[in-house]
Length: 96
Image 1: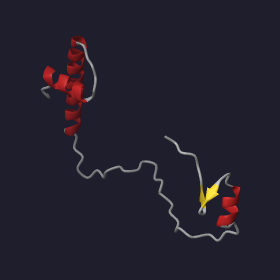
Image 2 (image 1 turned 30 degrees about the horizontal axis):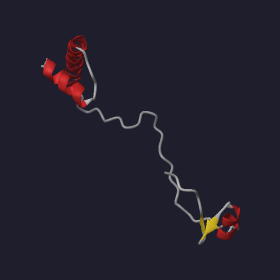
Image 3 (image 1 turned 90 degrees about the vertical axis):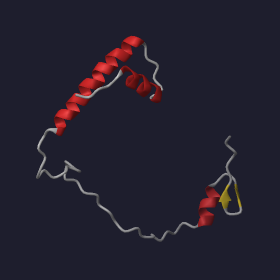
């Protein structure tokens, strides 16, 4: 069984930016010990010959090559739609 001290829980809470009262620290200490005990039980399982599961739905990514598609729209056509432009760029207001 894992040994988790009260100081360990207080340090973990500080690292997590949590403010705990004494009763919460005692309860979390007990909960963390139980969780670590459960994880230790999982370590006892015989997993020899079991392939790791990366994807359970058998879905595969479908990739396609990037291709440049010709377009009848020109840069000047698009800039003409902008409310304000300069030097072939769309001008926008400053955002601070």
